[in-house]
Length: 377
Image (tube, rainbow, N blue to C red; front, side, top):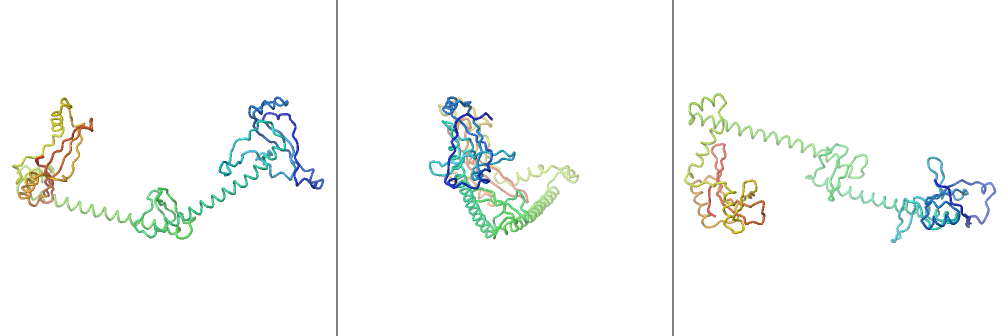
């Protein structure tokens, strides 16, 4: 630290010093240092008064025991006047903390340093009191929030704690409406919030058991479908299979597609005279766009084709009549009028093309088959 500027330090008197204390008490003092900054004007003033003109200044003096509340002692035993951190009032009269050293335009006197330390000491107590009150208020708000969340959780059986981290009997995490994750710990909670971890753990274990049961039921259902298909295929091969197919089926090497294909043809045999929907969207959209002067040379490929399919919300008279004809032919089928909207990805503003198809779903034994047929647009 730079040596102190040489200037006069004028001691100040306070009301408490009007009555001299006993000699032994008055003689008890502590060597204290004070560090502060000088602005450019202050550095000039320091040089004019014979000082070193450094930006960081440190002076050492003695402080009587009656003013030790203005002094701080660090872990190395160095005593310093409390000038840092600084506490000031902002425009809203709130106490704010500043961690830099005070800066002066004129080298301060000892009087001014003591007054700065006394003001700093007084505002620090107010600052700490405000922070303590704010912490208390935050704790109260947090407690009320936790109680509200706990009450809502315990009252609603459908609510669940986060599964990661996994809930235990002693702690769990709930999500507040703000998205904040709150930890509920039996050792820290009060009131009904203490009941949350145990209930969250109970619900978590119940969900785990339900999922296991659901998976077992799903596997049993899937196995039943496989067994049904296996029996159906065996019966079909026995009745309609060729000698070669029967031999391969007995050896367990017959591809299922050799059975599915004739079954599909059997399912849609009543509609064999109807034209199927051809999925040539790129060529159809390209031909549609080239009829427009702006897109006479357009090239649409499958990579830049976007297709959005959905059930048609409206049907023309021709489409409705065709749908009724299909229903008369396959009354046991599930028939829907589908709309396929084709768009060009490279130019989203380009005209689109909507093609229609009648989507037919039929079952043959345990097998489900689907096929699309052309419909007028």
